[in-house]
Length: 541
Ligand SMILES: Cc1cc2nc3c(=O)[nH]c(=O)nc-3n(C[C@H](O)[C@H](O)[C@H](O)COP(=O)(O)OP(=O)(O)OC[C@H]3O[C@@H](n4cnc5c(N)ncnc54)[C@H](O)[C@@H]3O)c2cc1C
Image (cartoon, rainbow, N blue to C red; front, top):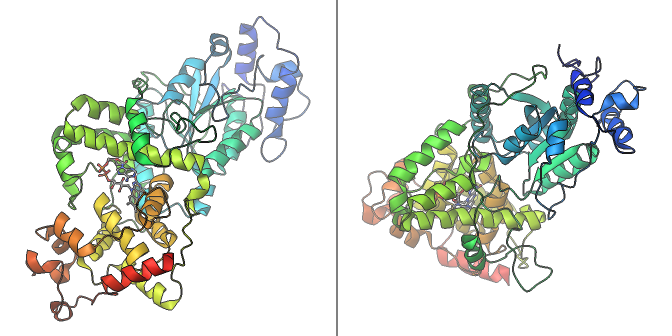
């Protein structure tokens, strides 16, 4: 074995070759303390000592390992020094929500800095424990990992897949491969921020290069623009001024996929998960993977984008891009998506790019206020309904049996497809939180259990926006599902497609079946709209 380690354990079996090679290449001695710190990094490991103690200090690490300050949010963009590029033999690239080889700054930088990279993905226990492993997303993820592995193999590499605690697995991989750098893109959720902080602590003596400023998971990084005039403002709380600033910013250039991705031969990998092994996937759930995302984007730019300004609020599937799961898993780069849409130009592109700005907007709110994933962003002293009647109404909403056809059509589509058009998300969320006056967290959790694009920033903050506890400037607006249905599904085809009880009804009646409902086996409305509205306004106080 070229690198002396045992792939099954974290114990180094022999002095790694790269250390010897590295030492031979360096003429300069390490700065005072560098090797002591380096040895501590190797020997510590997350579960205690992982390296046989007592190796001479100079043999463990090449000189000039440093805790470069690429980490903390708000610090200067990471830079690769030429000096370090010559010193580092192996770097780990930890993939998270950026499962692609095109336009991937951490991968490109790691390849410039090191002779070999270890492309690592960890099936993270923390994600499972948080209940974020919904079958539709797991199936999509399986596609993404298969495609990422194929994309790496096309370039001479491969994916190293591990499972467990992500920080422990990164440490294990670092020890096994002797890597001197870990490259990872910054995420905006509280979970991602905690993971990054843990990584920095666990690998204190290695270069943990956190790509905060390089726009890997968003088009513009959170914090890139902040409101002027207030020293304490770390994010925009209102969309329109954010959009104005966002639209004026120059995005970084897109990066091509690397031609070659040399990966060391050793590090063992779990077998890749297979989509068909995931139980409970919705029949119409989307397929993942970078080639699929790129194909969809190209088709959308060619066939859908031009009409988007007029079609965005329609309820049928063809009206919007369907790119959200690819943006969530990072099989599409947000920077590239914006750049290509802008290049296509026109009113459709402008409207589409504005929606992509909404995505960044929610990410910058969450990055600054990670607690908004669960706590009201702007508390309104709501007295949400609880108890058996509220539970019964919430269950009717989940099952698509509220007696409001457009709401029921949407909830049934969600269960069948793991996706929903944006307008349908707004209607169903408004119905639950305002007409039924049930806590937004109940609805957000149900969405996350089904949506393939389920995303903490977009889901939780759109739920809050709709419930009036978030950044919405009209918190008490209540959407009328009948009027909305007539406007956005004028011929009733959306309702007829998803509510088979109503397929025989013509356009004029399908959104309001009234007395016909019982004979068709369709439920009566769970609540009168006016009563629901009053109850909400009373409750909000
Ligand atoms: C209650 C509720 C929950 C939502 N949950 C999610 C979620 O979990 N994940 C998610 O990606 N989006 C979510 N959205 C936002 C939006 O509805 C979806 O992004 C969009 O419907 C996805 O379909 P599309 O890709 O065809 O969108 P398009 O209309 O083609 O829009 C293009 C892209 O812009 C972004 N985008 C559009 N609208 C929004 C928005 N309001 N907020 C943030 N980004 C937006 C998405 O990345 C989308 O793919 C939610 C909206 C609401 C009202």
